[in-house]
Length: 213
Image (tube, rainbow, N blue to C red; front, side):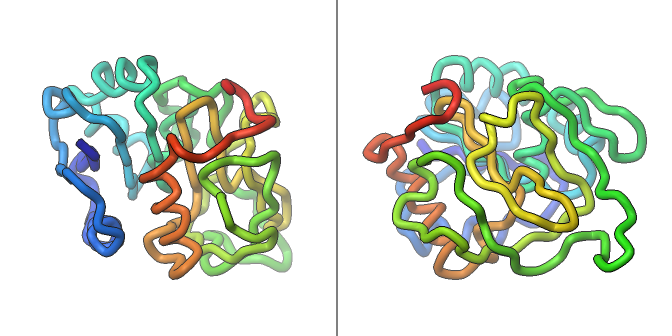
């Protein structure tokens, strides 16, 4: 079962449409922790604020079952806030505890003299190491971002792709079978569909020089 977590914070239509376009099999929308049982892959397309998202995850009893699934090695893809929640702490509207799967914090972009916040639009990926998530994706490929906060891992080796937006930040992270992307693959056209398809067949692809492998 491919479990797509819906914690009630936003519209999942674009992600579900992309997965159906890729003919993802045995797709199920999950709204409560008990429904994660039997999942072979998990996608969390988070939207909204970090703290509110974590609160909804707790209210739906999703946190403990999700952590158990991640500890067992079930492949996970977190999108946008779904990536941010992997970290220890998010600083959006106060400090909020995350899942604590990847050490580090989620920080707000500083005020730039020549760039707008939120970071919104297309930007180019700098790939780090070789992640199966980016199989057959070219260096410098464009993907679509909408965010005001960025992830800062304690260990830079957790970063599988970076982007320069006034400062270099983690556009994607990985720890073993746990993947996160700050951008929106469901809005990134051909490149995004390739990334989602790579996740669907991640067991066939190779990860090198990344933590947890």
